[in-house]
Amino acid sequence: MDNLSLCLKDVKEAGAYRLNCRLDELYAAVAGAGYVLFEIDLAEIEGKETFIAAIAQVVHAPDWFGSNWDALADTLSDFSWQPAFGYVLLLRNDNGTLGMTAEDHNIVMEIFVETIAFWKSQDKPFWVFFC
Image (cartoon, rainbow, N blue to C red; front, side, top):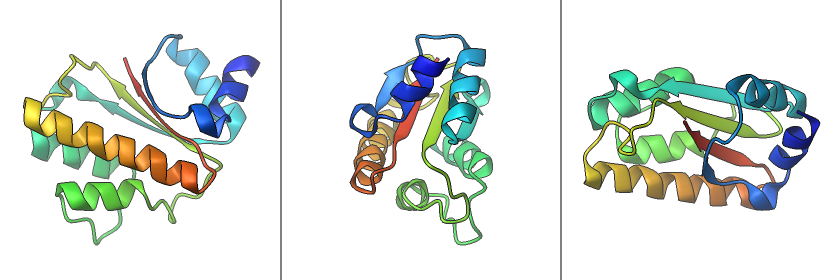
């Protein structure tokens, strides 16, 4: 767990990855690093709307959240209501599409890449794990 906590703190390595450890190890490492974990079960996701709504719910999106791609990108880059040393987004039961069309999946992946880059510029890690 200590190794994983140290790895999570490495801003340069933050990114989107397939999870290669047990969930309990990830939970402990996230807590040990002082990060906030946002966990979403993708089993019930059936398209863009339910995906965006699931993320909005788990991150406790503010009232201004607009339920569209731009609002999702803005929200993932502004956790002023959820301050932490870093953030981990865990997407469980991923079938490779996140429950969306190929086009929407590509948009989400681009948002993740931009979000990770933004937080790196703030010297904070933002991790996305798929399992």
